[in-house]
Amino acid sequence: LFAPHPVSTAAAALMIATQLWLVLSGNFSWLNWITIVLALSVVRFPADPPATAAAPLWYEVVVLAVAALLVFLSHRPVRNMISRRQVMNRSFDALHLVNTYGAFGSVSRVRYEVVIEGTADEVARKDGDWREYEFRGKPGDPRRWPRQFAPYHLRLDWLMWFAALSPSYAGSWFGTFVERLLENDRATLRLLRGSPFPPDAPPRFVRARLFRYRYTTWRELRETGACWERTYVREYLPPTRLTGAPDRS
Image (cartoon, rainbow, N blue to C red):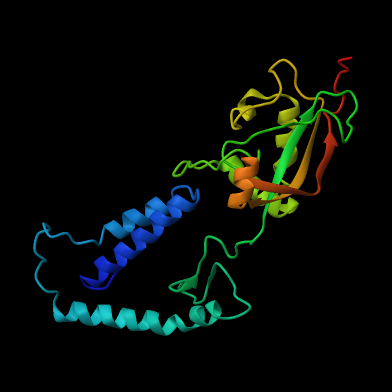
């Protein structure tokens, strides 16, 4: 992007095309749009005014010197990038001029999702009347197609994705979230697509289970009408109720 025209314009066009493809393939909040705006700032159009006068010699010397310094300092980040023990999000010099950064250090090849369910039964049984809570964006009902929400950021759905990767990522908030569901908290339920329980009858128990999701094949889609196929993996949170909850029997 910092090269002269037309190299900068070509690089910007390639970057914009890549970001638009990412917009179509997933919900990455405003990240793609910020990148597109930055790339557009270097695009030169035919109607643009002519370039200003050439920079003085001393300025070009300073720019080349700084560029040479950055190239020299970048050998450690480059070695890190091609290493099998790659370190993410780290600075490699005291002045913090060069570093290695990635929004996602790694991306899993298997998609796990935490499915949260509630029941109004007096006793929590595995085969009881468990009703699933639906989120706005994250996969849940296998028949519900993925939706496009970007650049709006569904923060709760995003946090649930991390919760499925490891319970340690959800340790600071998941318990409180379940407690709010048991209370039928209105503000919390507004973050969801909907609640399977009426406002005046909260669930007696809430549980969470971990499933492995994959896209169905074209044949499976035609036969079942489901875009997802999910397989039960394990219990994520056993049936839980509020401490001292009154009996409704």
